[in-house]
Image 1 (tube, helix red, strand yellow):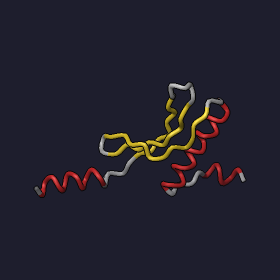
Image 2 (cartoon, rainbow, N blue to C red):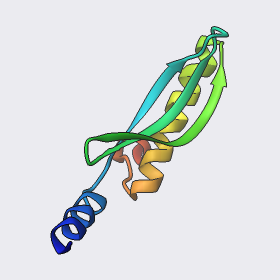
Image 3 (cartoon, one colour):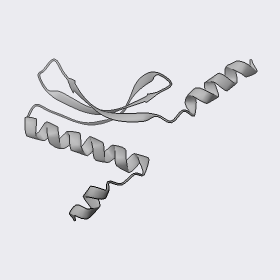
Length: 83
């Protein structure tokens, strides 16, 4: 029993990696979601938005990357210098 508890504890504390994913829908629109991979499993963390316009999809993709940076506490040195 202790061994199972330790395995579960190790999996939950593995740092997850987050990615922005463009998911195509049946309605020909694209859903932008942030996914996390931890313990060998993918999990949808946040839905950023849905659109069918290419320019708006790219904007949502950038918003997803910004969301990841904000959640992980990382900052982009290039964005700070752009101001």
